Length: 157
Image (tube, rainbow, N blue to C red; front, side, top):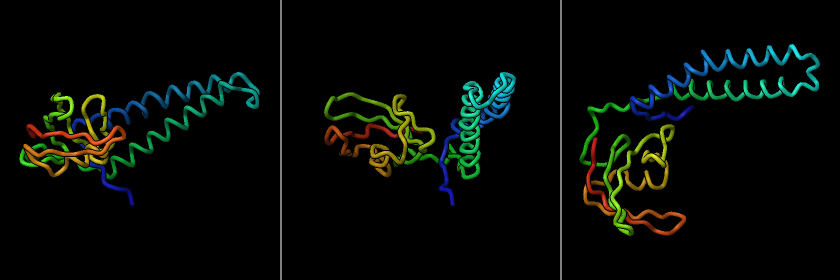
């Protein structure tokens, strides 16, 4: 049994768009590459053919992965989001108590994680640590560089 993927509406649209691109554009491009490589003759020493087949396998694997995610997806209902407690979908303004820097994060499902852009997976140590906390809470998170403390300044939708 596959686990349910929690995703924002924006994330769902992004996945559906990627799937459509892979199926309608990338598949055709790969088929054309394979057709061209086949025209070169002897497949035993045809690196273009091998490369195209490998690329095809990667694309088909990604299509399968996205289709499986979409079968088990639960889209967050923005109207159900609360600003009382941190949960998946919450955006939060936090203060790093070591550096005194204020940062904004959004807790998202693992398929939407993008830490460099402030989108933290609910399954990551940092994301898990924030879940179920409220405004004013101080959270200690164990990282490879030691314990980091954050204060939740505000929970946003």
